[in-house]
Every structure is written in structure tokens, then in C-alpha cells.
Image (cartoon, rainbow, N blue to C red; front, side, top):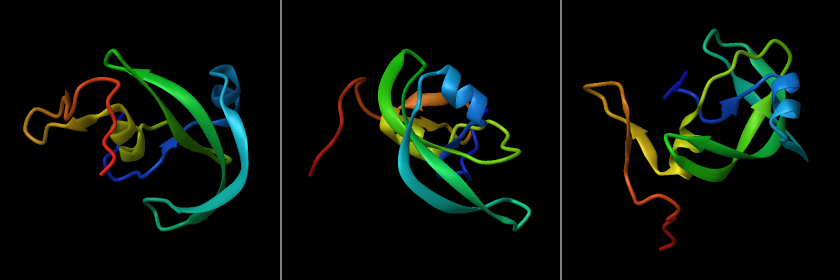
Length: 99
């Protein structure tokens, strides 16, 4: 599920381990939709979605429910079409911008 209100993609620890994510020695504080603030571990992972593959950062915390955040969409060059709700490309696959 994509959550355009989420900065990071969120996975539970077990799923992060299953997909081969590697932990970065850094923790962040996330504000959840209900206003709670949780401490989350940060991981790097290679993600594939809609035929595109890119490295991205994800966050894991106790009781996490998996969502795809906007950082991952940006890393993949995708966005959510506000009318259809479907993912669409914003740049060619495997191309990042550096201005």
C-alpha cells in the first residue's frame, strides 16, 4: 500500500530481514498518524516496483504496518496520479537527476 503522507517506506523487522535490507547505524523519530512519536531503525534496501528498481531507505519499528512512502516513490521515479490513484512515471527508469 502506498501512503503519500509517509516519508519513509515502513516494514516490520522480519520483512526487512527477508528482503535482505541492511541496517544503517542510525535511528530516527517518526510521528505516526495518531500523533504518537516512535523511534525507528533505518535500513537500506533495493526495491523493485512497477518494473523499476532502485536503492532506498526504509524504517522499521515495533508494531509497524507496511506502507510504501514517498521517498521510495521518488527514488524509483514514480508518483501517485491524484485522479486515478495509480502509480505513474515522472522520469525514465534507472535515471536520477542531479542538478
